[in-house]
Amino acid sequence: MSRVAKNPASRGSARPTLEAVAARAGVGRGTVSRVVNGSEGVSAKARTAVQKAIAELGYVPNRAARTLVTSRTDSVALVIPEAETRLVAEPYFSDTIRGVTAGLADTDMQLLLILVRTAKERERLAAYLSAQRVDGVLLVSVHRDDPLPNLLETIDMPAVLGGRRSDREPLSYVHADNESGARAAVEHLLDRGRRAIATITGPLDMEAARARLDGHRKALGAEPPDASLVAQADFTEEGGIRAMRALLERRPDVDAVFAASDVMAAGAMQVLREAGRRVPEDVAVVGFDDSIVARHTDPPMTSVRQPIEEMGRTMTRMLLDEIANPGLPHRHVALATELVVRESS
Image 1 (cartoon, helix red, strand yellow):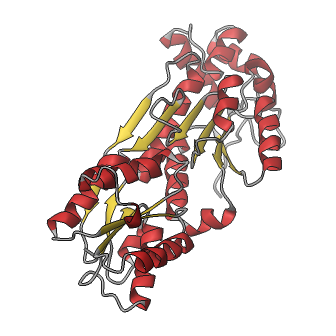
Image 2: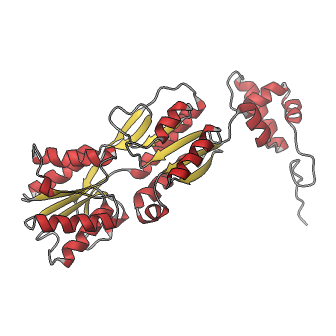
Image 3: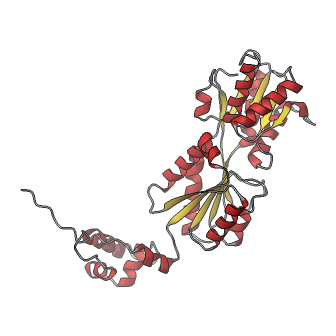
């Protein structure tokens, strides 16, 4: 019969205390507290002794007591100011969440996913954050007039944005090089001999959408741009459908479309198919994101790849740095994009 060694922290035994760890390690209680809370001012020898004692005794820090001492909650919020229908329908959000969770995988941090859809929910979130219920915030899908970034500045909450409000954004942020990605997409279409190249934009109160529109304009060298070749949408498939219908109505000669997201490009391809326009023979199509959508359209879609998961991981690393090092200067990171050519163009 095998024998099972008893764990001091197992059920039915007394829970090891900070004092017990200190006695086992041969150090003071304050030294153990500093090691547990990740503080500086502990020698390598003492830290090793404390960590060994923690492992031997099975000591687990009292999270509630630690919160009172450190004012830390060991949680961060990922705030998405969009409806849950977009969260499910658009791969951008699931890829972002995957990157954030990967960035937190080796930490003790808990992730709270918060959707903000109404003014009332925004007010409730503002009160929650002002009460310092989390240690930091990741905010994606940033709109120009969203009051949340200003609130985060006011309450001095560590925060990193996925995207930015403008090129003068004061908070830390991570974004893709949207303008150069869009420019590469339109230059690719020009190289294929296309001349009536339309674009379907995202919401123009978002800097990413404005940058992708700027890339379209600069590639065409159109100053002022031809407004008949621009249709504004909202990064949804339904928006892409409506925009493509409007483009065909006013510009039946269109021979290429650059859509500012794969989801909108998929909607545009549906309309072209219904109108009897062949892709790419009659109208070439390019999307943006290089999401799973791009690989499953018929024909497969040319798209600008932005490293969404890497953006999520980078945002998370930056936020953890800001939480651990109050006063750290804000950082702005732009990640490169890449055109992935498939049959749609």
